[in-house]
Image 1 (cartoon, rainbow over the protein chains, first blue to last red):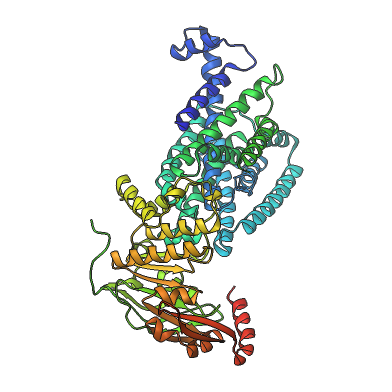
Image 2 (image 1 turned 90 degrees about the horizontal axis):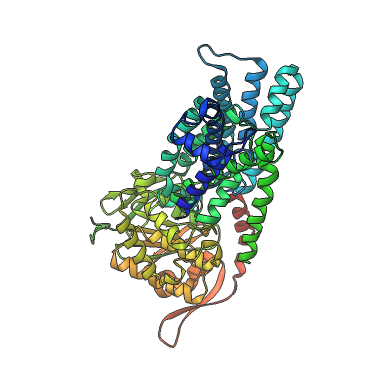
Length: 330
Length: 283
């Protein structure tokens, strides 16, 4: 029920996202164009099919990827503060991507955007391996993981700043705009890549839904039920690095979705992972879709970087939600 | 599909069990007499003698050498999910306070490593364990709204729900009040007898063990001290050697033996330093 409601809300949010933008588009024109492409003139067709729709779908897919990544990460690290951007996975992916942009790395036979995505994934996976090693050595206890993740964020941010410091002015401008998080580079090709990563990751995650739910009892308890905790954590974190890497590579830094999505899903659906995992993906998609709409409509005629909008609008809403819930319990 | 084998020969045999930590050997070639099916076995001893280590080694939760046979089944040669199919191990820690409701927590324990179980089979197993432990009132309460003792009972339900042949419970009464302690022991006794399972239960309450256990394994700081029927194992002499206390075993008005503890034994003062040092070395 709640999942269906979330899906409906997401659909409406995507429609709203498509409607907003520098050029006005009436709902009737939009629907007519969507149902019957080309019926409302070539300009409307181009706006809808080449600009608005890929951007809106991209926002939803990236939100879903980050929401799912955050949910899996919070469960396997047993930490409600875990998300790709709070524990340095996002920063690592950013570093990998920055290096490609700055050094103008070209891999033979691979277009630049793919090279960026690939390097983002490699760096994200390395940071994930480090987190996994720490989790295995010290147990997934809250403090150690969070401290390590925070240390990782600071180190990587410093290295990122260093990379920007030595960058040429041209590359720097590209980098800065990109670290603010932007959906303006959306294309059907990129949509297809993110969609395929999601299509691969979500079913694998869902197959482990029972084991992930059992893991909520605690690591020792899950082991005693026969759950292979170490392998479960490693494969889940691998999915997280894949999801975070494509998100970062194509839209830059959009923090907090990976934190907010799972929390919203947990408040609405609880932690039975059969519902919690898809719920987190849907909630992430919904939040980023709304943020994208806001970024296009807050300042008339100007599209703000969506990463900035997500943080400025999303965080207060999230805090209100969380604190309201806590008070209700107390 | 039968979850358990009603085989009177399905006793637990442990021989040459060796396990320990990097710096300290806990058990070296430990041999125990066979423990018959359908018995509730109390694992007793002072802090830091290795009760938890003993249970973890049998569960396969920590590296150990030696032979562990459950009936015809060579448990010690099984690992991971295959071993846990036959073993229900309850760790000393309580299940975490999460937003899962108790029912979901127990169902997930059942399904986590057994994807082949149907929804109906899972529901029926969960239903049985909630009935057995009288936990129906908790079934739809979130774990983070339950008290420590209530969560401990849910933890027990998670260990029992798969109906394993061997139960290993590590101080399952530590957070329970008197009524729930009795409810737990009676629930476990019922399960053990009905399913002809074997339960090893680490306890601190000697009187609880004396009253309800069929067998006792008593560890002292020097190693295994005694095994056998409760009245034979729990004697003033053994308690002095294991716990370093002076105690009397007297008959209550119903004729049951009761342990009355008087004071720390004279020779035990030196041992306290030894015990705390060991406890420190284990973590």
